[in-house]
Image (tube, rainbow, N blue to C red; front, side, top):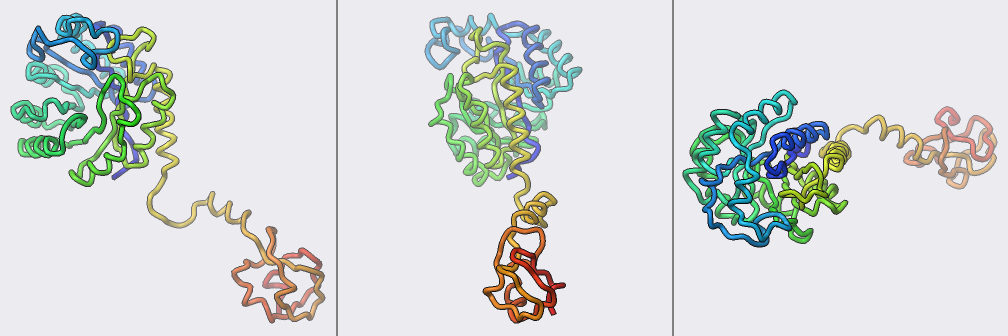
Length: 345
């Protein structure tokens, strides 16, 4: 698994709360923070959900559990013209589009009018063969969000996707639980996913965005070879808009990106090679050298008691002690003088 050049997706989801201007502001903030892509949900509500879909905890963000979900999402949904405008501005801003189409109508619209760099396939669609085929046939790189899916469902969805000409797949580990508890994150399962399926793996964590650890947890995924990190972004957590629980404010997102990029540098190379210049410098100042343990006159045949090992600027390496004992000293040395090959006959 590769841990270099990690793709960072700023997942906006429904954080726009129905305002295309707010969506654009969040997108621009994500770009300024250093995100590589902006994640959006494009949804045709009548195709996606029945009008009588029930309310309750875990279906929408906190404080809205009492609302009729269908009408609530309909009210904050962006229309096709909004998304076309958004996509145009995003292209000019220089950020990639990572789109999760929630239904066939939205997928067809995205293909015709947005042409995103990436698609996202939610685990809820892993049992929709027709939809998987349709996404695969676009040929676009696709992120499989595997939260809530069984290993068998992941395998079946991957096989079907590949059989229908699908593009590059990355498995995104993690699920949204408004927010997800730390003990439910299980980042080590990324390794199992890679071992089972042999495709790139990333993390879409949903830790409480108000907890400072939310900016640190994804760094663990870097060490496990994550190729992609997805993190929710919102304009202002204090507004408690949709999907705010796991989201970071723009300034926090910028700090998160800086942590990731610093983490990539710190991880460095996996394989050993010649010592770096920095390591050579450290070696030069930290190693002990061979010095005179006492005053020694020229002509003395050196014994072990004549020699000590101390940090010094001059002197033979202690590793050569056996080649020095029994040699004759040709110059006078005082205590703590370094012993060099030039001092010996």
